[in-house]
Length: 492
Ligand code: GLC
Image (cartoon, rainbow, N blue to C red; front, side, top):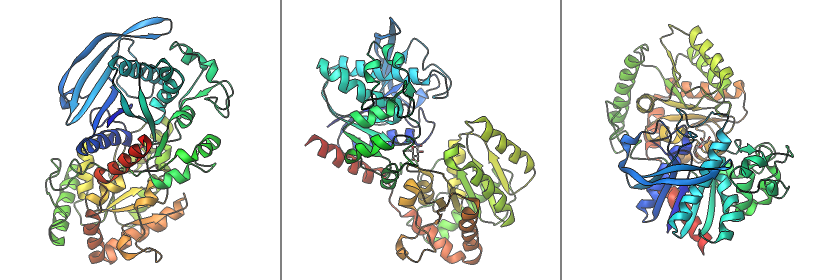
């Protein structure tokens, strides 16, 4: 089966968040299942091309029409481990920028990319079984294909799949932005087409994805249910419910080779699930000591809580701050590793960092740092994920794999993967963490306190849960097979 993924991110060469991990992980897992998979990606300025093999110019001077002019582009081809990738470099400087997102021109940048990717596929002339799109950045491809390219009959795509990693971001533009590509934007400004439900003169690109994709895949089963509600559909309530039959949640996997305490090159003391409990706990303790030195924390035997992720509203910044303060009271250590994307949230965390300066039990780092992330997973006892909403969430799964215990808010994919150790309604062998339901500091407090008390008062049980969590299977193989089954059903 020929599968083409078109996305804004691909880990580890171009990653902001989990989207990049998923495009990379899913593609290589599908290749292992014998499929022919490629990924098309913009050629960003800071792409880590050192990680690529056979990186070369594939086609020069590839012309795309935009804003009444033809623009020249270069296509590169390369391999990322086993995944075939194509990079589109525009001469307009849409992508030759230091960041992947965060520009006023983001919508125009990705619209241009959508057209360029379609033109590229058209020029290749290959029959594509599954065109797999991800989030709003590439959702417009579904609209352009069904409304324009499929009619021209020069590009043949059998089915289009759209993964929803985050429904909140939808991509809004004016009809003029579509006209700029040489298409007819006004014709899409209709209630049953891309007209935004709240802004009558605006087009909504993700809405187009729901209408024109053949299958919609939210990244967990629970998120697939949640987006049907008014509250979680972010204005797309009507269209999400109208296209309900096309929606099917599939939980993400994690890259179990990249995230493996047995082979992790960033950690000093390696360990693995088949080892006796004591060996695992000793290795984790030693990794904790390394980390404490590295971050200048007190070298004490205390419970360690880590929170790793982008510091955006979705991740519950106020609850994270609250947990940091709470951990001081409960005699625990806390490390926060997260990049800042928003001035207001940034300011409040900078203030907290300043106020806690000199506190030897708290470390706060505002960055995306792969090495430190690995060191944290290997050292930590608990992984905190207090999200407002979380389509899937990867850190709780990586946390399991490194023998730690998640403390999470029961939402989205977190509710599909974490089961409370104190919940009598849950089967004993399923229990693996601590959860809370309400998005409030008091709900967080109760789960957080139960977790820290568990570490202090019930150390043997705590350790055996840590070991057991290492054996949970969230590998991509399992999830990729679910995708494959979905693709096959679509092609029937
Ligand atoms: C987004 C979601 C996150 C998910 C990831 C990968 O970043 O916020 O929950 O795990 O995409 O699908």
